[in-house]
Image 1 (cartoon, rainbow, N blue to C red):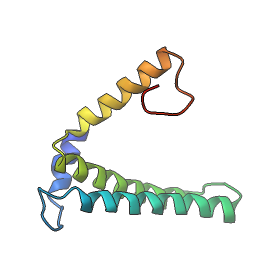
Image 2: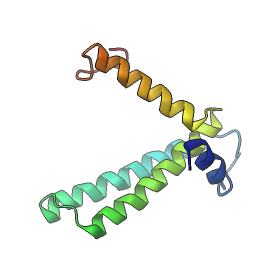
Image 3: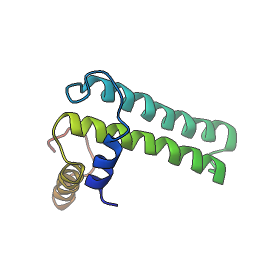
Image 4: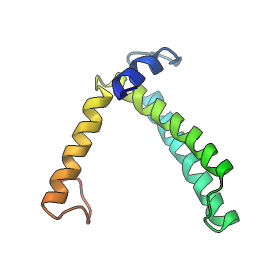
Length: 109
């Protein structure tokens, strides 16, 4: 499955207010789900000395799927194709790598 196929298929399960004109809802969902990923990683560091077992990995994989779902919905709300978003990110990172600017801060380095 490519990213645009995922984006189209995931839209079938989108149920939130003002669907088609609401970037706020998927943005808040994205922040919440990313927080859940971070919390699970934090607990592995705290409770498992940073060692990810099969169960922890599976739980994080499920949360990453939720992050992807919200990214797909936000992209759709803003009129972006996920394939385009992904390619733009790779192009940006490739440009930074070629210029020796992967490290540092700021979007326009």
